[in-house]
Length: 110
Image 1: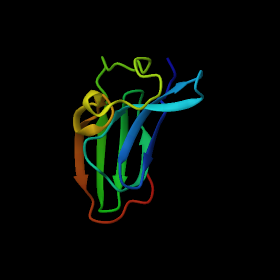
Image 2: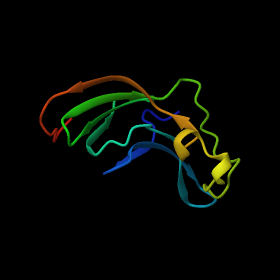
Image 3: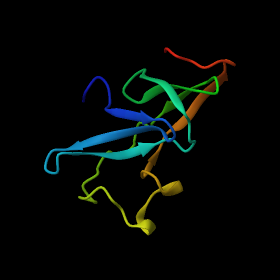
Image 4: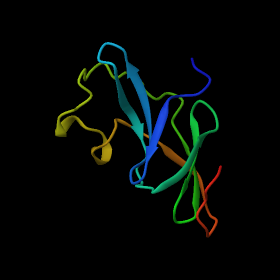
């Protein structure tokens, strides 16, 4: 197990945890946030937890469940059919919001 889990964020869709598939040379998202945050900063706190700041002045701590399934082999393309997608048409696993705090100004560094 790596000390930090691979992940990424984007401007409108918050945070995604990904798994690398060597056979396809691709990153496949297996977990994501349910809230569309406009991320300005993100950092990993530990293997299951990340802190995210958005342009509206909020800091959120998000955690993936300890028993989350990272197996992405059921769908070798990484593109699931609409009826097989997880909650909210995203990844099959969802991040849980542990805490959130409104700072009131855009956060530029975590």
